[in-house]
Image (cartoon, rainbow, N blue to C red; front, side, top):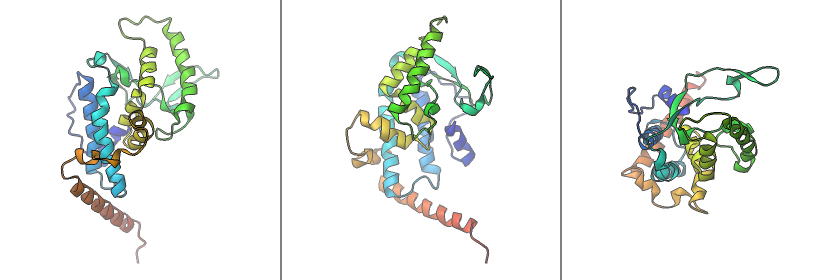
Length: 243
């Protein structure tokens, strides 16, 4: 949902409204492109040189690693209808906690089956605050219920969702999908849950990765720092008491 909200901030995504994706690669590449556009187009996208370098390195790493997290077996589907804004305030229940109604469905869409995920808020924390061990406890409980429900349901050629969810959790695809869905949380999620799958220490910005995100990376960093300073100046003026 956060990705779509960037349009309200004037961040261009260059994605035509009539585009229909037939492969997982093209879909995830365009989502990541939106993150690129945010870093390039948002005047307050970075705090300082270090922050800018980390963001550049993370986006470069994400582009390189995406194929490692999505199976070629499902590159052409299936694509499942998914409620991407399903949270506590959108779920109505009766006195016995049976779900009676779901609201706020305008963010629903069809997504690659490996990008369908359990709610991130099972532990009541934000996307960039989740502790994997803590989250795994209610996740296992919900998965057991899903497996039980699926036993009484015909799959009609579609892989059982419980199997897909178990795989994406074990492989780390859960975190990649969560990161792609959250411009504000991508960098923390990458640092906490994705980067450690490939490196035991350090930071993605320690090496040459920032230089592979854009040509003339040093000049880009200088421009972003200048934009942030100008943004802060205008913000102070907007809230300055008239004299």
